[in-house]
Image (cartoon, rainbow, N blue to C red; front, side, top):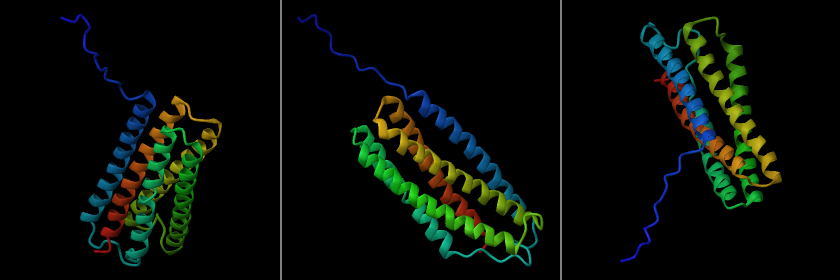
Length: 194
C-alpha cells in the first residue's frame, strides 16, 4: 500500500479586483434598473408617450450603433486572452480597436444627443427628462469603458503582471456589462416608437 496521498486541488477564489468590479457593476445595474423602472412608470401613467411635440425615436441608427458597440466585446475578449498568454502587442492592438470603435459610437451618440437637446429640452416633459437621464448615464458608462481601455493600453506597455491581468479581467467584465446595458437602453428608448 502506498503512503503517498492523491494531490488535492485547491479552489482558487476570484481576485479582489474582480469582486470590486462585480460590486460596482451590481450598483450600476441597480441604478439603471431604477431609471428603467422610472421610465416605464412614467410611460404607463402618461396619456401620450412620447408627448406631443416630441418626435418618436428612429429605429435604424440606434440599432446599428448598438450592434457595433456590442461587437466590441470580441476584441476585448481577445485582448484578455492575449494578455493571459503574455502577447502584449496583440492585447494592446485589440484594446485599441475596441477603444476606437467605442469612441466612434460615443461620438455619434453625443451628436444625436445634442441634436435631440435642440429639438426638446429635459425640462419640458417627464419623457424628455427620463430620456436624457437614461441616455446620458449610459454614455458616461461607455466613456468610462474607453478610459479603462486606454489606461490598460498604456499599462501593458511595460508588460503583463498578475495585477494588470486582474485589472484587465475586471475591465473586460465592465465592458461586457456596458454592452449588455446598451441593448437594454436602446430597447427602452425604442419602446416609445411602438
